[in-house]
Image (cartoon, rainbow, N blue to C red):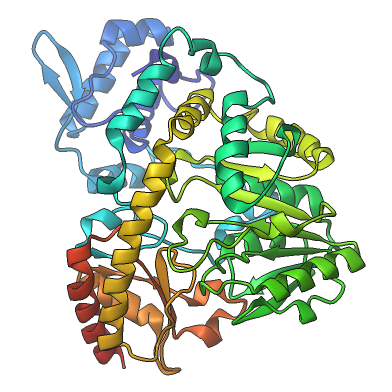
Length: 489
């Protein structure tokens, strides 16, 4: 415990001894002094606070008699291992010892309250459940950890040391930019110059910066419905003029975009329905943008997991007028916690996004950038993508068969592939209740209402991810889920 955290105020009406006791109890409440942690010696504390050692000793002894501290011979005082929350609460209830709380009315101070927005919620302990049909997580058994370690070791050599120890201010690792340009974008049919690429802390970071740069209070923004909740929430922080565009079997309905100035789309693999936008619809979308002087944000998430159809080029590959701002991420193929994404856009916009990124975090961690660059350059990422596609295809087929046996007519097999199934139950199904009941039986699924602009009237949808669940768990998990549906209905 750092002594600098402790201080007393001599002008207070409370005695010094009482202040010392309150100070230590506050540190325990805040977790700064955990169980069995030593407290500063009476001599050191007295010197720090400029009080008599006897005052400190009396405060320590009083805390020991109350059960907060224990004295160990020739060792000093330690936080009691038996301290319980109810003891803390009784301490707070005592007016003579009550810890002062903040008197700030944050409801008046805060301009925005993002915590009140409806969003996707996933259990942090999802991997402790036997049947985790959770989207966006990866199966660690499929990841080439030895190759990743080797890339890390290489970055630690003197040869690469300055690649990640230097502060690049607003610059990116040139090796990573080169690899994104040559090995990632070429898979999507996107040709880009180096000055048109910016590395971000995942796709989320990229989307947030674009929203703040491009959306004013009166900007009319179009989003897919159902669609990505986070982007809808980002836009809501900037404008009240959001239009929700329905999605059909060909993707976003371009005929309903009208005079919107910005459209967010997931054309290759619509989020969350898995629909792939038709080529004809893509051309219509580009024509709309050109005619209305509008911009399109393309989120090409999960581009790596196309195992059901011929490779579909990104919408950006058809763009000839710089209208499409392309967002990519490596989270779905590498690891979600790595947070590596990128933007491809005209140099004028990239320059401004780079300046904004510098204000937020300067640049993504240099060590991560160089490790990913090596991982890509050595061809390990390509091999990983092939492995993931093979495994995801197998799991998708197992899940599809289990769904056919238990939920016939509730879903469509994704044409793209991906790592999830979008399920539409009967109108009387409440997926929120289903989620709670299934969780009690060890089955994790995601309610689908959060993806809609009108959640209350779309409570019969849910999503099943299969990227993190092993093959042998899929069928028994779906069988359990079917039992839960019978109970809910």
